Image (cartoon, rainbow, N blue to C red; front, side, top):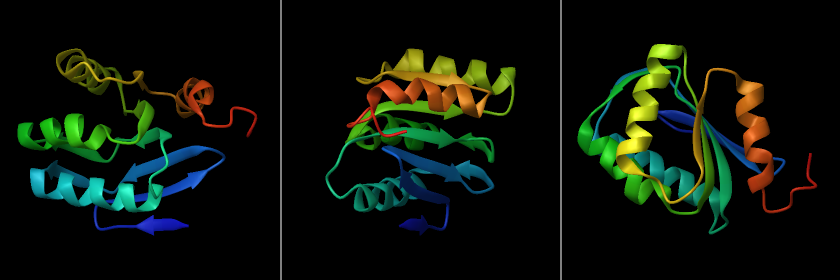
Length: 128
């Protein structure tokens, strides 16, 4: 099942939840709440490692970042963030260091490396 929401497209495939943001200049708290709500409905009370493609997002307000770091962490076993370039990577790494997520989190500029990182956190690791 694919959820094609206002701000992101998400689906579950081979034990990983794929989350691809649509082109957004700025994410606010209200948007973050809607995004998390849609993700949790898709997950149906099952935890997943999440591949999150942030390349289409320019900025997120502090309240949105805080919401995503706390409430957005529910039912997440690991998180791989895909960003456009080294500058975006530095910003994302600072966010991770500041928020200290309770689950393994890494930032990548390469999609295949991001997906490889998530393999160990799948509920059923043998699913390829």
